[in-house]
Image (cartoon, rainbow, N blue to C red; front, side, top):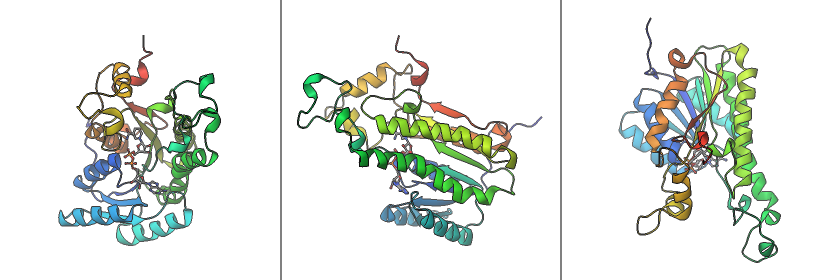
Amino acid sequence: MEISLEADMTDKVIVITGGTGVLCAAIVEMLAVKGGKIGVIDINEEALNKMQEAYKNRGLKVLGVHASVLDKNSLEKAKDIIHEKLGNVDILINGAGGNHSKGTTSSEYLYIKDIDTEDIVTFYDLDKEGIEFVFNLNFLGTLLPSQVFTKDMLRKEGCCVINISSMNAFTPLTKIPAYSAAKSAVSNLTQWMAVHFSKVGIRVNAIAPGFFLTAQNHKLLINEDGSFTERAEKIISNTPMERFGKTEELLGSIQFLINEKASGFITGVVLPIDGGFSAYSGV
Ligand code: NAD
């Protein structure tokens, strides 16, 4: 019996959306170093150009393609470019996602005194457009690229889709009802797609990152003197491993889920990478 946990990416064409973002950029690097041909889709043109140039200088195959996960036409055009420059797609990683301040409440709980108080966003003040933005980006932004890129995978072997859900999909986090529900929808869609694509050999799984300390959330979690903010303290005390995740700790899960030899019978799972956060009841 031969078991290999190292995924062979050589000449695999891998599309990753939101690929210039904090977490996905690390995934791009890992896949490119392992020999994959990576098509990075993002709306941040400047970051795409920078990324493509940096990889070109290292002799690695990373192609930046400007497109929005919410615009099917732009995704079809991106696919044409990827076909021409890299070939038919084997793997899709739906990485684009995020929250919006207008889908976020100021407080964890509703208090009578806060209702109709200026500067405090309660449940009643949540903005329809903010909520739509979050649902569109996370849910539709996973569904539309899957429609466009899984067509390449239909008559091939070893193809898969990896979605990015979140810890808040299992139990919603306070203050961010739209993001929590939208990621819950991403987890649900992952299971739906896993079943739907089971007869055509495309596995569909998701990872659910917990709390990762990134440049973006640094201010929310770390005070100027280097100590943890109140929210960070709360996260750590609810994480049995008592620390934040490191970006590189996502990479093994991506390799594992891509690797047909290691995870060929796994489809429809949402894999928590969270130091035990989702397993802990708080007591
Ligand atoms: P990020 O904000 O750093 O990156 C998101 C990327 O998506 C950006 O490059 C942005 O330009 C791109 N993007 C936004 N709208 C787009 C669109 N319409 N079309 C194409 N690209 C678009 O995010 P991140 O922290 O690296 O997170 C990556 C994924 O992981 C997201 O789905 C996020 O929700 C999820 N996630 C992140 C964390 C975390 O701790 N950072 C935790 C759980 C889940």
